[in-house]
Length: 122
Image 1: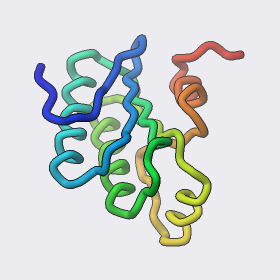
Image 2: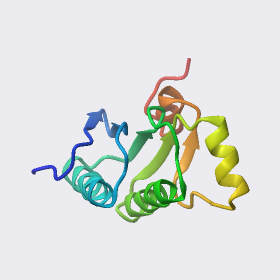
Image 3: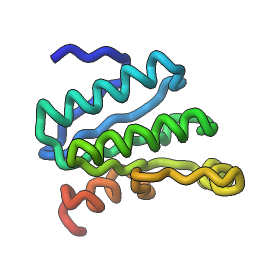
């Protein structure tokens, strides 16, 4: 399997982990979504944790891409959890009336893994 985009996707047990630090322009976003689906298929992952703590801002375009990725993951039988969203970003998305759809949210990577049942309780 060859990845199409620059965003790494790591496998941790039966969950995938990716950290987005680049602007999700159309070509990068499409490659990211394709890579996520290919990795879910290849690994049989039950979920994916998408860390956006490295993004300075999340506009409606990026939010739409992330929500679509969550919907795509769900259609393949995996859950998607978005972590690392800054409070001001969450407030902006709510004020704009934007719902994240099929993607769940959690405070940080550890909590995201716990939500997917892939991290020991502690």
